[in-house]
Amino acid sequence: MKLVEKKAEITAEALLSAGHALVIFDKRLSVANLPLGGGRMDIRAALTQALKRKGKAEGELAKTPLALDLGGSRTVFLALDAQAPTFERHSTIRKALAPLLEEAPEKLAIALVGDEPWRERIGAGAVYVAALNGEPLPSRKSGPAHTPLKQVTLHGMVGKAGLSQALAVAEGNRLTRSLAVLPPNELSPGLYRKRIKSLAKTYGWQVREYDFAALKKMGAGAFCAVAQGSPARDAAIVRVDYDGRAKGKAVALVGKGICFDTGGHNLKPARYMHGMHEDMTGSAVVLGILAAASRLKLPVKLTGWLALAENHISPQAYRQNEVVTALNGSTIEIVHTDAEGRMVLADTLHLAAREKPQLICDFATLTGSMHYALGSRMSGVFATSSALAHQASRAGSASGERIVVFPQPTDYDEALESTVADVKQCTLEGEADHILATRFLARFVGDVPWLHMDLSSHNCKGGLGAVATDITGFGVAWGVAWLTQAA
Image (cartoon, rainbow, N blue to C red):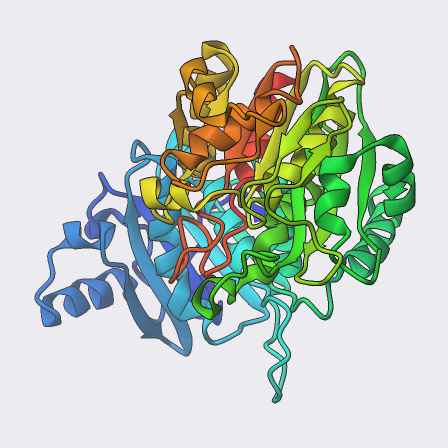
């Protein structure tokens, strides 16, 4: 999508000929103050009359945007409070853009009306929401293709760094969602690996694969226990490197990439197996962050570690009561084959940790208990220090992707004590499984500072925050905000 920036505020004539336009004005302004009078139509008067006909006060434009057809141009008016939380601003802008984007325009005008500090606070968010939602996700439905938004003209703001970041993060989020929406027959581990190599050429990444045979030889028994159920033997841990470092930090990003999860021998019922092609979302979030960081040339060294596998039911699949040896030498008692995510992450986290990065952050659609704790509108985060926890919270507030930091007290380890191995994979009770999963994974990180995000909000019916689709791409905007702080 092309962004055209214009310093001057939009004129009434330009608005009438825009075709599709969103006018966002400072909530502190009244309609009479909008510089949209004169010309062939008094737009201020038309807006005032429309509000009167609908029995609405001007102040209601801050919650319920108003769409008008003006001289052949469909225009939405929205009042916005620059001090409102980022999530709230993004949600309101998304709802305002909906009646415009549903007509699939090729061009869109966004007009900012307010003082310069207000415009700087609002402009990047408006561009971000438009760029996120202006291009449809891959679909296999027959019929004419939905036209993507090709150009946004932003009136009232020029040359701000936030605009470049908005476009880069939107690109990363779209990449994440376009992968997560793919059906499992189009994104097996083998096909996923080919896509990653293609993305590497686009963004200039270096790629190294640890395939099943190599991991078996290395002793990655936790990963291989899950992967051995697939006859394709196409599972792998894929390493992706982006090095934009001048003096920036070295950060490892780890993503769960279970391309389909049947639950294994502890087979999921149909209700809970449906949608399990999205169990690779954590790995797609890592790729989305890498894409945005590459576009922005962030001064940080990023190494992505993607655990790509499928959790199949087959004669070769791992079983309850087996004891397997992980890459770090720990023995694990298998309790439930549907707790496969922590198994593939265990060896992947160890691979990342043994290179001693300054930070590790992993993303995973890991536990149902996190969804029960938070629903689908926020994600949960665990941190190894209060400083990291505060960074995570600040990134959530700045990005509009809300998180809740959970504790991980060591006394929870008692539930994972095994009589036949070093540790149990999980418990059968399910109580506090989001905490137990974190305590399990902590064994494979060592002393490297670590953040773990359980992506309970990777899918939210009706959209979430800036994103209009059910699949949200949650974690990309948060990750870029967090990395910007860390760098």
